[in-house]
Image (cartoon, rainbow, N blue to C red):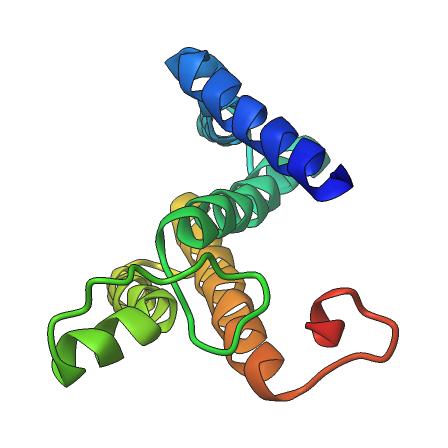
Length: 162
């Protein structure tokens, strides 16, 4: 009987979440993108040689990583990752299954290559060149985290127990 009540409660929450508006359903993503835009605006108006300017530049890279993490774990899948969402059930053949199983890694690799290309053509000492270099570093960290957490674990970590 207790199980039935729990299932009913879960169903009620699903129905309630469907009734919420766009802002309520995506408030976390909107907030993170808003903070990232704030850092970009503040950095574009600041001197990168000051403490605040340097802070804003670093914040752009850090918050870009937060935004990509929120969106990537919401829409993409990585086989073996406890943090990843569940894959779709209607896969059409081994090729699409492999693409789906590693969509998070493939996304990070593809966008990471783009960031490296931008950085390669930018002046690393320029105002925005430093930011792009930091974004490349952030993307590398996220990709390494995805790959390493598929095989390695940390004792007493909630994700490692799965």
